[in-house]
Image (tube, rainbow over all chains, first blue to last red; front, side, top):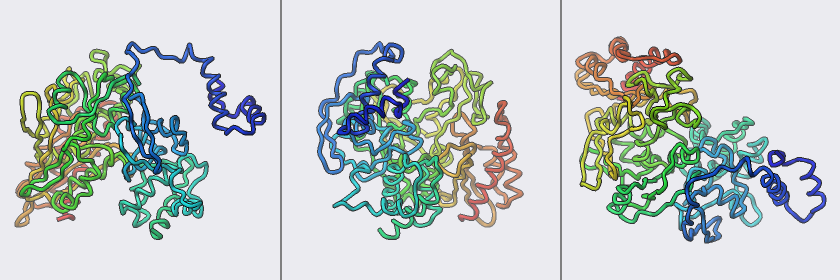
Length: 206
Length: 325
Protein backbone atom coordinates (compact mmCIF):
# COMPACT_ATOMS: atom_id res chain seq x y z
CA UNK A 1 0.00 0.00 0.00
CA UNK A 2 1.19 3.45 -0.83
CA UNK A 3 0.33 4.78 2.62
CA UNK A 4 3.05 2.57 4.10
CA UNK A 5 5.70 4.01 1.76
CA UNK A 6 5.98 7.68 2.62
CA UNK A 7 9.07 8.04 0.47
CA UNK A 8 7.49 6.71 -2.71
CA UNK A 9 8.22 8.47 -5.98
CA UNK A 10 4.79 10.10 -5.88
CA UNK A 11 5.53 11.79 -2.58
CA UNK A 12 8.90 13.04 -3.73
CA UNK A 13 7.41 14.28 -6.99
CA UNK A 14 4.63 16.18 -5.23
CA UNK A 15 7.07 17.63 -2.72
CA UNK A 16 9.18 18.98 -5.56
CA UNK A 17 6.13 20.52 -7.18
CA UNK A 18 4.67 22.05 -4.04
CA UNK A 19 7.50 23.84 -2.31
CA UNK A 20 5.16 25.78 -0.06
CA UNK A 21 3.63 22.76 1.70
CA UNK A 22 5.17 20.90 4.63
CA UNK A 23 6.34 17.35 4.10
CA UNK A 24 3.71 16.19 6.56
CA UNK A 25 0.90 17.96 4.71
CA UNK A 26 1.98 16.29 1.49
CA UNK A 27 2.26 12.88 3.08
CA UNK A 28 -1.18 13.30 4.62
CA UNK A 29 -2.60 14.07 1.17
CA UNK A 30 -0.87 11.17 -0.53
CA UNK A 31 -1.72 8.83 2.33
CA UNK A 32 -5.31 9.98 2.22
CA UNK A 33 -5.65 9.09 -1.44
CA UNK A 34 -4.13 5.68 -0.82
CA UNK A 35 -6.32 5.06 2.22
CA UNK A 36 -9.42 5.97 0.23
CA UNK A 37 -8.51 3.45 -2.43
CA UNK A 38 -7.98 0.79 0.21
CA UNK A 39 -11.10 1.62 2.22
CA UNK A 40 -13.42 -1.25 1.23
CA UNK A 41 -11.03 -3.89 2.61
CA UNK A 42 -9.57 -1.96 5.53
CA UNK A 43 -12.81 -0.71 7.05
CA UNK A 44 -14.11 -2.57 10.08
CA UNK A 45 -17.85 -2.39 10.49
CA UNK A 46 -19.17 -1.74 13.97
CA UNK A 47 -22.63 -2.65 15.15
CA UNK A 48 -22.59 0.16 17.66
CA UNK A 49 -23.95 3.57 16.83
CA UNK A 50 -21.33 6.27 16.27
CA UNK A 51 -20.08 7.71 19.53
CA UNK A 52 -21.56 10.91 20.76
CA UNK A 53 -19.11 13.73 21.32
CA UNK A 54 -17.83 14.46 24.80
CA UNK A 55 -18.76 18.09 24.58
CA UNK A 56 -16.10 20.71 24.98
CA UNK A 57 -12.76 19.61 26.38
CA UNK A 58 -10.37 22.37 27.37
CA UNK A 59 -6.67 21.61 27.18
CA UNK A 60 -3.84 24.05 27.77
CA UNK A 61 -0.99 22.79 25.65
CA UNK A 62 2.40 24.49 25.99
CA UNK A 63 0.62 27.45 27.53
CA UNK A 64 -1.89 27.80 24.73
CA UNK A 65 -5.57 27.11 25.54
CA UNK A 66 -7.66 24.95 23.19
CA UNK A 67 -11.35 24.09 23.26
CA UNK A 68 -12.05 20.87 21.45
CA UNK A 69 -15.08 18.79 20.59
CA UNK A 70 -13.84 15.21 20.67
CA UNK A 71 -14.84 11.64 20.01
CA UNK A 72 -14.39 9.98 23.46
CA UNK A 73 -12.17 7.32 21.87
CA UNK A 74 -9.38 9.73 21.08
CA UNK A 75 -6.22 9.34 23.11
CA UNK A 76 -4.37 12.38 24.33
CA UNK A 77 -1.61 11.36 21.92
CA UNK A 78 -3.90 11.38 18.89
CA UNK A 79 -5.36 14.74 19.84
CA UNK A 80 -1.88 16.25 20.17
CA UNK A 81 -0.70 14.84 16.86
CA UNK A 82 -3.77 14.84 14.66
CA UNK A 83 -5.91 17.68 15.99
CA UNK A 84 -3.30 20.11 17.28
CA UNK A 85 -0.66 19.11 14.73
CA UNK A 86 1.97 18.76 17.47
CA UNK A 87 3.74 15.84 15.85
CA UNK A 88 6.88 16.04 17.99
CA UNK A 89 5.22 13.59 20.38
CA UNK A 90 5.66 10.20 18.73
CA UNK A 91 3.41 7.18 18.41
CA UNK A 92 5.60 4.12 18.88
CA UNK A 93 3.82 1.06 20.28
CA UNK A 94 0.51 2.74 21.13
CA UNK A 95 0.20 0.40 24.13
CA UNK A 96 2.23 2.04 26.86
CA UNK A 97 5.34 -0.07 26.40
CA UNK A 98 7.83 2.21 24.63
CA UNK A 99 7.50 5.70 26.13
CA UNK A 100 7.82 7.53 22.79
CA UNK A 101 4.58 9.41 23.51
CA UNK A 102 5.65 10.72 26.93
CA UNK A 103 4.38 14.21 27.76
CA UNK A 104 4.01 16.17 30.99
CA UNK A 105 0.39 16.18 32.16
CA UNK A 106 -0.02 18.68 35.01
CA UNK A 107 3.77 18.46 35.43
CA UNK A 108 3.86 14.65 35.69
CA UNK A 109 5.29 12.42 32.99
CA UNK A 110 2.70 10.11 31.47
CA UNK A 111 2.31 8.03 28.32
CA UNK A 112 -0.21 9.95 26.25
CA UNK A 113 -1.30 6.86 24.28
CA UNK A 114 -2.95 5.23 27.32
CA UNK A 115 -5.17 8.06 28.39
CA UNK A 116 -8.25 9.58 26.83
CA UNK A 117 -8.17 13.29 26.03
CA UNK A 118 -11.74 13.52 27.31
CA UNK A 119 -10.53 12.64 30.81
CA UNK A 120 -8.37 15.77 31.04
CA UNK A 121 -10.64 18.76 30.78
CA UNK A 122 -8.73 21.73 32.21
CA UNK A 123 -5.33 20.01 32.19
CA UNK A 124 -1.97 21.61 31.48
CA UNK A 125 0.07 19.65 28.98
CA UNK A 126 3.66 20.19 27.97
CA UNK A 127 5.15 18.59 24.88
CA UNK A 128 8.57 18.69 23.25
CA UNK A 129 7.42 21.69 21.20
CA UNK A 130 6.92 23.68 24.40
CA UNK A 131 10.47 23.36 25.75
CA UNK A 132 12.26 26.00 23.70
CA UNK A 133 12.22 29.44 25.28
CA UNK A 134 13.29 32.67 23.60
CA UNK A 135 15.02 30.77 20.83
CA UNK A 136 17.05 28.70 23.31
CA UNK A 137 16.81 24.96 23.65
CA UNK A 138 15.87 23.49 27.03
CA UNK A 139 19.03 22.47 28.96
CA UNK A 140 18.12 18.78 28.58
CA UNK A 141 17.73 19.22 24.82
CA UNK A 142 21.19 20.79 24.72
CA UNK A 143 22.56 17.94 26.82
CA UNK A 144 21.11 15.37 24.39
CA UNK A 145 22.93 17.12 21.54
CA UNK A 146 26.20 17.37 23.46
CA UNK A 147 26.17 13.74 24.64
CA UNK A 148 24.86 12.13 21.44
CA UNK A 149 21.75 10.97 23.26
CA UNK A 150 20.16 9.79 20.04
CA UNK A 151 20.68 8.10 16.74
CA UNK A 152 17.52 7.97 14.63
CA UNK A 153 15.76 10.40 16.94
CA UNK A 154 12.32 8.78 17.01
CA UNK A 155 12.33 8.10 20.74
CA UNK A 156 14.04 11.40 21.59
CA UNK A 157 11.02 13.61 22.34
CA UNK A 158 9.72 10.94 24.72
CA UNK A 159 13.16 10.47 26.27
CA UNK A 160 13.52 14.21 26.86
CA UNK A 161 10.06 14.67 28.35
CA UNK A 162 10.62 11.63 30.55
CA UNK A 163 14.09 12.93 31.48
CA UNK A 164 12.57 16.22 32.61
CA UNK A 165 10.20 14.23 34.82
CA UNK A 166 13.02 12.03 36.10
CA UNK A 167 15.12 15.05 37.11
CA UNK A 168 12.15 16.87 38.69
CA UNK A 169 11.29 13.76 40.74
CA UNK A 170 14.84 13.66 42.09
CA UNK A 171 15.74 10.32 40.51
CA UNK A 172 18.74 11.39 38.48
CA UNK A 173 21.44 11.08 41.16
CA UNK A 174 23.56 8.27 39.71
CA UNK A 175 23.77 6.50 36.34
CA UNK A 176 22.16 3.38 37.87
CA UNK A 177 19.31 5.42 39.28
CA UNK A 178 18.80 7.15 35.92
CA UNK A 179 18.74 3.82 34.08
CA UNK A 180 16.07 2.48 36.46
CA UNK A 181 13.93 5.62 36.42
CA UNK A 182 14.22 6.05 32.63
CA UNK A 183 13.37 2.41 31.91
CA UNK A 184 9.91 3.37 30.62
CA UNK A 185 11.58 4.76 27.50
CA UNK A 186 12.92 2.33 24.95
CA UNK A 187 15.62 3.31 22.43
CA UNK A 188 15.99 0.69 19.73
CA UNK A 189 19.14 2.36 18.36
CA UNK A 190 20.71 1.71 21.75
CA UNK A 191 21.73 5.28 22.49
CA UNK A 192 21.36 4.57 26.20
CA UNK A 193 24.90 5.61 27.29
CA UNK A 194 24.38 9.03 25.72
CA UNK A 195 20.87 9.33 27.14
CA UNK A 196 22.07 8.53 30.67
CA UNK A 197 24.97 10.98 30.31
CA UNK A 198 22.65 13.71 29.04
CA UNK A 199 20.16 13.28 31.89
CA UNK A 200 22.97 13.17 34.46
CA UNK A 201 24.55 16.30 33.02
CA UNK A 202 21.29 18.25 32.89
CA UNK A 203 20.45 17.13 36.44
CA UNK A 204 23.74 18.54 37.68
CA UNK A 205 23.06 21.84 35.95
CA UNK A 206 19.43 22.02 37.13
CA UNK B 1 -11.66 0.95 19.40
CA UNK B 2 -15.42 0.41 19.52
CA UNK B 3 -17.57 3.46 20.26
CA UNK B 4 -18.46 4.20 23.88
CA UNK B 5 -19.75 7.05 25.99
CA UNK B 6 -17.93 8.54 28.95
CA UNK B 7 -19.28 10.63 31.80
CA UNK B 8 -17.60 12.14 34.84
CA UNK B 9 -18.71 10.91 38.25
CA UNK B 10 -19.46 13.81 40.55
CA UNK B 11 -20.03 11.77 43.73
CA UNK B 12 -19.23 8.32 45.07
CA UNK B 13 -22.94 7.52 45.27
CA UNK B 14 -23.42 8.69 41.70
CA UNK B 15 -20.54 6.54 40.50
CA UNK B 16 -21.96 3.49 42.26
CA UNK B 17 -25.42 4.14 40.82
CA UNK B 18 -23.94 4.44 37.32
CA UNK B 19 -21.92 1.24 37.72
CA UNK B 20 -24.98 -0.58 39.05
CA UNK B 21 -26.71 0.07 35.75
CA UNK B 22 -23.90 -1.50 33.73
CA UNK B 23 -21.36 1.29 33.35
CA UNK B 24 -17.68 0.57 33.89
CA UNK B 25 -15.39 2.59 36.13
CA UNK B 26 -12.30 4.10 34.58
CA UNK B 27 -9.46 5.47 36.74
CA UNK B 28 -5.88 5.55 35.42
CA UNK B 29 -7.04 3.66 32.36
CA UNK B 30 -3.65 2.11 31.65
CA UNK B 31 -5.05 -1.41 31.44
CA UNK B 32 -8.56 -0.66 30.28
CA UNK B 33 -7.73 1.69 27.38
CA UNK B 34 -5.05 -0.65 26.13
CA UNK B 35 -7.47 -3.58 26.12
CA UNK B 36 -10.30 -1.51 24.63
CA UNK B 37 -8.03 -0.58 21.74
CA UNK B 38 -7.43 -4.31 21.17
CA UNK B 39 -11.20 -4.88 21.51
CA UNK B 40 -10.54 -7.39 24.29
CA UNK B 41 -12.52 -5.08 26.57
CA UNK B 42 -15.72 -3.69 25.02
CA UNK B 43 -17.51 -1.47 27.52
CA UNK B 44 -20.28 0.67 26.04
CA UNK B 45 -20.39 3.22 28.85
CA UNK B 46 -17.59 4.46 31.09
CA UNK B 47 -17.72 6.45 34.31
CA UNK B 48 -14.60 8.52 34.91
CA UNK B 49 -14.04 8.35 38.68
CA UNK B 50 -10.79 10.30 38.80
CA UNK B 51 -12.23 13.36 40.52
CA UNK B 52 -13.76 11.42 43.42
CA UNK B 53 -12.13 12.16 46.82
CA UNK B 54 -10.37 8.80 47.12
CA UNK B 55 -6.72 9.73 46.67
CA UNK B 56 -5.78 10.18 50.30
CA UNK B 57 -2.76 8.38 51.77
CA UNK B 58 -2.66 8.46 55.57
CA UNK B 59 -1.40 6.72 58.69
CA UNK B 60 -3.99 5.72 61.29
CA UNK B 61 -2.26 4.43 64.41
CA UNK B 62 0.27 2.12 62.84
CA UNK B 63 -1.99 1.23 59.90
CA UNK B 64 -1.46 2.63 56.43
CA UNK B 65 -4.70 3.61 54.67
CA UNK B 66 -4.45 4.12 50.92
CA UNK B 67 -7.26 5.66 48.89
CA UNK B 68 -8.23 3.56 45.89
CA UNK B 69 -7.47 6.42 43.52
CA UNK B 70 -4.03 7.21 44.95
CA UNK B 71 -1.48 6.81 42.19
CA UNK B 72 1.22 4.14 42.48
CA UNK B 73 3.95 6.80 42.27
CA UNK B 74 2.40 8.93 45.02
CA UNK B 75 2.03 6.00 47.40
CA UNK B 76 5.60 4.85 46.75
CA UNK B 77 7.02 8.37 47.27
CA UNK B 78 4.99 9.14 50.42
CA UNK B 79 7.40 9.70 53.36
CA UNK B 80 5.22 7.82 55.87
CA UNK B 81 4.89 4.86 53.51
CA UNK B 82 8.66 4.73 53.01
CA UNK B 83 9.29 5.03 56.74
CA UNK B 84 6.62 2.72 58.18
CA UNK B 85 5.73 0.40 55.32
CA UNK B 86 8.80 0.21 53.06
CA UNK B 87 7.67 -3.11 51.58
CA UNK B 88 4.65 -1.35 50.04
CA UNK B 89 6.87 1.33 48.49
CA UNK B 90 9.41 -1.19 47.26
CA UNK B 91 6.86 -3.38 45.49
CA UNK B 92 5.21 -0.38 43.82
CA UNK B 93 8.51 0.93 42.46
CA UNK B 94 9.28 -2.52 41.04
CA UNK B 95 6.05 -2.41 39.03
CA UNK B 96 5.43 -0.85 35.60
CA UNK B 97 7.34 2.27 34.45
CA UNK B 98 7.61 5.74 36.01
CA UNK B 99 5.06 7.09 33.53
CA UNK B 100 2.56 4.31 34.23
CA UNK B 101 3.07 4.65 37.99
CA UNK B 102 2.11 8.31 37.66
CA UNK B 103 -1.14 7.24 36.01
CA UNK B 104 -2.23 3.93 37.54
CA UNK B 105 -4.36 3.85 40.69
CA UNK B 106 -4.07 1.35 43.54
CA UNK B 107 -7.63 0.11 43.01
CA UNK B 108 -7.02 -0.32 39.30
CA UNK B 109 -3.74 -2.08 39.97
CA UNK B 110 -5.55 -4.74 42.02
CA UNK B 111 -8.17 -5.17 39.28
CA UNK B 112 -5.71 -5.22 36.37
CA UNK B 113 -6.27 -8.03 33.94
CA UNK B 114 -4.10 -10.96 32.91
CA UNK B 115 -0.96 -10.47 30.83
CA UNK B 116 -1.35 -13.84 29.09
CA UNK B 117 -0.58 -13.14 25.40
CA UNK B 118 -3.52 -15.27 24.27
CA UNK B 119 -5.91 -13.14 26.31
CA UNK B 120 -4.94 -10.18 24.12
CA UNK B 121 -5.01 -12.14 20.85
CA UNK B 122 -8.55 -12.05 19.48
CA UNK B 123 -8.05 -15.03 17.16
CA UNK B 124 -6.66 -17.28 19.92
CA UNK B 125 -8.76 -19.42 22.27
CA UNK B 126 -9.10 -17.87 25.71
CA UNK B 127 -11.70 -18.78 28.30
CA UNK B 128 -11.02 -15.58 30.18
CA UNK B 129 -11.87 -13.40 27.19
CA UNK B 130 -14.36 -15.69 25.50
CA UNK B 131 -15.77 -18.29 27.94
CA UNK B 132 -15.91 -21.79 26.49
CA UNK B 133 -13.45 -21.13 23.67
CA UNK B 134 -10.61 -23.07 25.32
CA UNK B 135 -7.18 -22.14 26.65
CA UNK B 136 -4.41 -21.73 24.09
CA UNK B 137 -1.77 -21.31 26.79
CA UNK B 138 -2.07 -24.78 28.32
CA UNK B 139 -0.40 -26.31 25.26
CA UNK B 140 1.09 -23.09 23.95
CA UNK B 141 3.77 -20.63 24.98
CA UNK B 142 3.43 -20.82 28.74
CA UNK B 143 6.85 -19.98 30.20
CA UNK B 144 5.35 -17.04 32.06
CA UNK B 145 2.26 -18.84 33.33
CA UNK B 146 1.15 -20.13 36.70
CA UNK B 147 2.02 -23.33 38.56
CA UNK B 148 -0.46 -22.79 41.40
CA UNK B 149 -4.21 -22.34 41.32
CA UNK B 150 -4.54 -23.30 37.67
CA UNK B 151 -7.42 -25.20 36.13
CA UNK B 152 -7.99 -26.93 32.82
CA UNK B 153 -9.60 -23.68 31.70
CA UNK B 154 -6.98 -21.05 32.57
CA UNK B 155 -3.35 -20.84 33.66
CA UNK B 156 -2.75 -17.07 33.58
CA UNK B 157 -0.94 -15.42 36.50
CA UNK B 158 -2.16 -12.37 38.34
CA UNK B 159 0.32 -9.68 37.29
CA UNK B 160 0.22 -7.21 40.21
CA UNK B 161 3.25 -6.75 42.49
CA UNK B 162 1.55 -4.72 45.22
CA UNK B 163 -1.18 -7.37 45.49
CA UNK B 164 1.44 -9.92 46.54
CA UNK B 165 2.61 -7.60 49.31
CA UNK B 166 -0.94 -6.80 50.43
CA UNK B 167 -1.72 -10.51 50.70
CA UNK B 168 1.49 -11.17 52.67
CA UNK B 169 0.73 -8.33 55.09
CA UNK B 170 -2.95 -9.34 55.49
CA UNK B 171 -4.23 -6.01 54.22
CA UNK B 172 -7.95 -5.40 54.02
CA UNK B 173 -10.07 -3.36 51.66
CA UNK B 174 -13.13 -1.21 52.14
CA UNK B 175 -15.68 -1.20 49.32
CA UNK B 176 -19.04 0.48 48.87
CA UNK B 177 -21.88 -0.71 46.67
CA UNK B 178 -25.59 -0.22 46.19
CA UNK B 179 -26.21 -2.17 49.41
CA UNK B 180 -23.68 -0.35 51.59
CA UNK B 181 -20.10 -0.77 52.69
CA UNK B 182 -18.14 -3.87 53.57
CA UNK B 183 -14.56 -4.71 54.41
CA UNK B 184 -12.65 -7.92 53.67
CA UNK B 185 -9.08 -9.22 53.28
CA UNK B 186 -7.44 -8.25 49.99
CA UNK B 187 -6.67 -11.95 49.53
CA UNK B 188 -10.41 -12.59 49.17
CA UNK B 189 -10.68 -10.16 46.25
CA UNK B 190 -9.11 -12.68 43.89
CA UNK B 191 -10.93 -15.72 42.55
CA UNK B 192 -9.33 -18.91 41.37
CA UNK B 193 -10.10 -19.48 37.68
CA UNK B 194 -11.85 -22.87 38.11
CA UNK B 195 -14.27 -23.24 35.23
CA UNK B 196 -15.14 -19.51 35.23
CA UNK B 197 -11.82 -17.76 34.51
CA UNK B 198 -13.65 -14.75 33.09
CA UNK B 199 -14.74 -13.95 36.68
CA UNK B 200 -11.58 -12.61 38.31
CA UNK B 201 -12.68 -10.86 41.48
CA UNK B 202 -15.36 -10.98 44.14
CA UNK B 203 -16.68 -7.42 43.89
CA UNK B 204 -20.45 -7.27 43.51
CA UNK B 205 -22.09 -5.29 40.71
CA UNK B 206 -21.66 -1.57 41.33
CA UNK B 207 -19.12 -1.96 44.13
CA UNK B 208 -16.35 0.63 44.23
CA UNK B 209 -13.08 0.17 46.10
CA UNK B 210 -12.69 3.02 48.61
CA UNK B 211 -9.50 2.23 50.52
CA UNK B 212 -6.89 -0.42 51.18
CA UNK B 213 -5.68 -0.76 54.78
CA UNK B 214 -2.27 -2.22 55.56
CA UNK B 215 -2.00 -3.13 59.25
CA UNK B 216 1.13 -2.14 61.11
CA UNK B 217 3.01 -5.16 62.43
CA UNK B 218 6.30 -6.01 64.15
CA UNK B 219 7.81 -6.88 60.78
CA UNK B 220 6.50 -3.98 58.71
CA UNK B 221 10.04 -2.66 58.50
CA UNK B 222 11.81 -6.04 58.23
CA UNK B 223 10.32 -6.96 54.95
CA UNK B 224 11.51 -7.12 51.37
CA UNK B 225 10.05 -7.65 47.92
CA UNK B 226 12.26 -9.46 45.44
CA UNK B 227 11.18 -9.55 41.79
CA UNK B 228 12.94 -11.82 39.31
CA UNK B 229 12.30 -11.02 35.67
CA UNK B 230 13.72 -11.00 32.15
CA UNK B 231 14.75 -7.33 32.37
CA UNK B 232 16.19 -5.39 35.30
CA UNK B 233 13.16 -3.11 35.41
CA UNK B 234 9.84 -2.42 33.68
CA UNK B 235 8.88 -6.06 33.28
CA UNK B 236 6.40 -8.45 34.87
CA UNK B 237 7.67 -11.01 37.37
CA UNK B 238 8.70 -14.51 36.41
CA UNK B 239 8.76 -15.12 40.15
CA UNK B 240 8.51 -12.62 42.98
CA UNK B 241 8.45 -12.92 46.75
CA UNK B 242 7.25 -10.64 49.54
CA UNK B 243 8.91 -11.80 52.74
CA UNK B 244 8.63 -10.42 56.26
CA UNK B 245 10.19 -11.75 59.45
CA UNK B 246 9.72 -10.86 63.11
CA UNK B 247 12.93 -11.99 64.81
CA UNK B 248 13.40 -11.84 68.58
CA UNK B 249 15.90 -13.52 70.90
CA UNK B 250 17.64 -15.03 67.88
CA UNK B 251 14.58 -16.89 66.61
CA UNK B 252 11.85 -16.20 64.09
CA UNK B 253 8.67 -15.34 65.99
CA UNK B 254 6.45 -14.74 62.98
CA UNK B 255 6.88 -14.98 59.24
CA UNK B 256 4.87 -13.75 56.29
CA UNK B 257 5.45 -14.92 52.78
CA UNK B 258 3.49 -14.47 49.55
CA UNK B 259 4.72 -14.96 46.02
CA UNK B 260 3.87 -13.61 42.58
CA UNK B 261 4.38 -14.77 39.01
CA UNK B 262 3.49 -18.33 39.98
CA UNK B 263 -0.19 -18.25 40.96
CA UNK B 264 -3.44 -17.48 39.24
CA UNK B 265 -3.80 -15.09 42.15
CA UNK B 266 -1.26 -13.72 44.65
CA UNK B 267 -0.08 -16.82 46.48
CA UNK B 268 0.43 -17.01 50.24
CA UNK B 269 2.75 -19.79 51.41
CA UNK B 270 1.48 -20.75 54.88
CA UNK B 271 3.46 -23.99 55.02
CA UNK B 272 6.75 -22.16 54.48
CA UNK B 273 5.78 -19.56 57.08
CA UNK B 274 5.07 -22.28 59.65
CA UNK B 275 8.36 -24.01 58.92
CA UNK B 276 10.24 -20.82 59.73
CA UNK B 277 8.66 -20.07 63.09
CA UNK B 278 10.83 -20.83 66.11
CA UNK B 279 13.96 -21.32 63.98
CA UNK B 280 17.20 -19.38 63.76
CA UNK B 281 17.14 -17.12 60.72
CA UNK B 282 19.98 -18.59 58.66
CA UNK B 283 20.43 -19.84 55.14
CA UNK B 284 19.99 -23.52 55.96
CA UNK B 285 16.68 -22.88 57.70
CA UNK B 286 15.53 -20.69 54.80
CA UNK B 287 16.46 -23.37 52.25
CA UNK B 288 14.69 -26.16 54.13
CA UNK B 289 11.54 -24.09 54.52
CA UNK B 290 11.61 -22.82 50.92
CA UNK B 291 11.59 -26.38 49.58
CA UNK B 292 8.03 -26.68 50.89
CA UNK B 293 7.00 -23.86 48.55
CA UNK B 294 6.58 -26.07 45.50
CA UNK B 295 4.28 -28.63 47.13
CA UNK B 296 1.19 -28.98 44.99
CA UNK B 297 2.70 -27.11 42.03
CA UNK B 298 1.44 -28.08 38.58
CA UNK B 299 4.07 -27.01 36.07
CA UNK B 300 3.26 -26.63 32.38
CA UNK B 301 5.41 -27.56 29.38
CA UNK B 302 7.31 -24.26 29.46
CA UNK B 303 7.58 -23.31 33.10
CA UNK B 304 9.28 -26.19 34.95
CA UNK B 305 12.06 -23.73 35.72
CA UNK B 306 9.79 -22.04 38.24
CA UNK B 307 10.04 -25.11 40.50
CA UNK B 308 13.71 -24.24 40.97
CA UNK B 309 13.47 -20.48 40.67
CA UNK B 310 10.70 -20.14 43.26
CA UNK B 311 12.55 -21.64 46.27
CA UNK B 312 15.71 -19.74 45.32
CA UNK B 313 13.80 -16.48 45.11
CA UNK B 314 12.24 -17.13 48.51
CA UNK B 315 15.62 -17.87 50.12
CA UNK B 316 17.12 -14.68 48.70
CA UNK B 317 14.12 -12.57 49.76
CA UNK B 318 14.37 -13.98 53.28
CA UNK B 319 18.09 -13.24 53.37
CA UNK B 320 17.46 -9.69 52.18
CA UNK B 321 15.00 -9.33 55.06
CA UNK B 322 17.73 -10.16 57.51
CA UNK B 323 19.99 -7.59 55.93
CA UNK B 324 17.26 -5.02 56.28
CA UNK B 325 16.71 -5.77 59.96
